[in-house]
Image 1 (tube, rainbow, N blue to C red):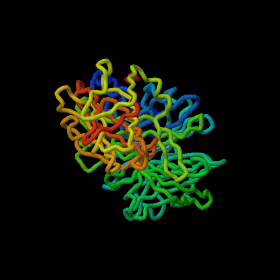
Image 2: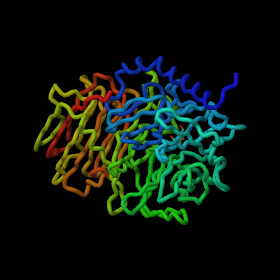
Image 3: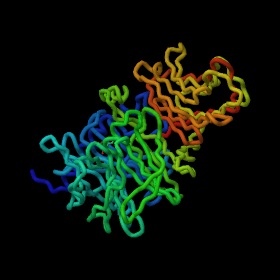
Length: 499
Ligand code: FRU
């Protein structure tokens, strides 16, 4: 039977919805599900896509495989929120259905969303394989009700990469400047990542402008999910470089010359120094806040089932970070802070003042359970002779499971050790804090079942990691080894679930 394109897309969406509907209630009962992070109703997700504040609501799309908890032909899942904290799942927005986006190893890859005079428009990468080679093109889909999307009949709107760039050509981020649309696309040349710039009057016809910026050979082999945005009178280019080992999401601070299409930069930083933070995307909200959300995982060299944690056995895999505001300091370094709206989740509260910590102490009264917590702690570093101090999180009653977040005054390093977290997770992640030169260390920590997000240096350093402890491992401990440390203040809130 022959279908027209629109009907066939709807058919593919319906099939995908059906697949999710049969499993989502079962998945919803999994004790490993997160309490206040966004997750798809079931199965696999990766990058955030199309983040936009549109007609009074936040919309989030995401890379979605609605048939299993492994990566597969990419769809765009969709959800919306009034407060960035509580999300409502909406029907799947895009499914692979066309010659340019229907392939077992392809689909509707990452991209962005814009408000085109009231029409919510998605710009994504159609990906297919032909004779073992990837073919990536930039495509449009639009909606008048912000729920159902029609692919543009003239797709793709950019059908080949520019001369000299590789066939890796994906993840368009589109924005408006004065009266023109601009698009940045990730690509590479000779194994060096680069970001390409395009310009358009109408979103449908694009002109190639330039290589916006590229790696000098030290910044990754391919730049995935590039995003460029203005902060004050400067610009930030954020991207996820491939082949950079521990570095998963980087940014450059500099200036953008729209006429030459060149971005020049003088500062390079990391968005997050943890194991799991990739493909962040930014958007601007109606209060003028620049906000990013990242995928709480990352591609790696390990087999996928080890990379992505045991929740795949329970038919889901992947989550989004809490939304973080982005601000820039005078030195070009960015500050990432949890959005204020999260405070609405605060429940039971525990406070401790001026306490010397020595050895190991139980920080929580029995009434506070330790798998959905916000912790704000300030330690005195003046005359502190401790070897290391910090928190043991998600500790089991018998002490066999524990995740250790510690700070060493000697080295100035924050360390996250998940070797004893759960029998699945592995590895130690370290990063140097600027607090080393200060009198106090302030840590702001979110623990949400399988995710720990840490904000240090007032947001100048963040570290995000996944762990998969037993649901009963809910003790939290404070410790100091070698000598005591003074805890100036400690606040712990139990956080309500948003689901
Ligand atoms: C980043 C990424 C993107 C691509 C998408 C496919 O995680 O590899 O470059 O568009 O995922 O799912």
